[in-house]
Length: 338
Image (cartoon, one colour):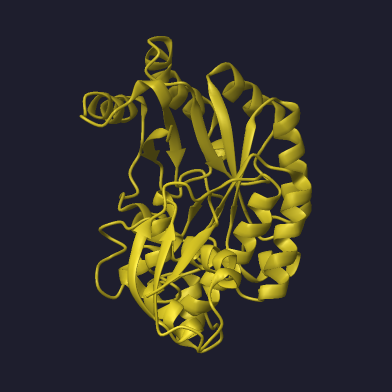
């Protein structure tokens, strides 16, 4: 069952400084205003009375800032606002996002007693040079330490990763992935770096001192990263930034691998590597019909049916039909000559 997550955004609040790539107001479409217990309750009330709310798998999430760098009184105020809804069983727990260098015993204890179950760390990279060039302000060792601290305290741990930062490369990022796998987090998110107007990264880009990943490069890197993570039983729960009204305004994303269905593009790329050996050799067929399991038909078709063109480019055959094969297992296709 998919989680029903109710987000409360605290854009850049608690952050010790501005990272080179970040503008949380545009990413979340939330203005930088003070979030207090009252505003948290208003957000929750609106959510629990909405048509799509499902208390069977609901979670309250604090996103967009560095939660554990807030003053402890403020942490308690925000968490206390959620407490009555936890007691009523409307939420199964709370998750927060934070920096790897902002954890201490007092804050871990506050979260633990207040119903926080999951902590997501903005790791971004496990390469210290990349972290320094991105003005991240923490080291790879901070991330290692943070994961161990959270595990010892009994939290579920997520990591957020960002390919394409200054100084990064495909080889460097895949090394990050291997280092993350060694830490064995419970989940991961992958957000390729985008050049957002007004950020330090935008200034570097405009001076031609930074070149972002192309869409094809980002899809390829994320596909291999996802394959490695999920092969190690670490689920990738999100790839690419969500569309927000502010971020989608013309001129806000200056460059980089933005796509409204980025995660789907990556999943299609992974799927194509699985089925490619099952396709006929080039020139052997003129027309084909392909069957796949029902859940994988969208992956076979691809974004706006781009998968059909990909199949033709690999086989030289025109795809005249894609059908559901009810008995076909995941990753298997049946190709019929027409």
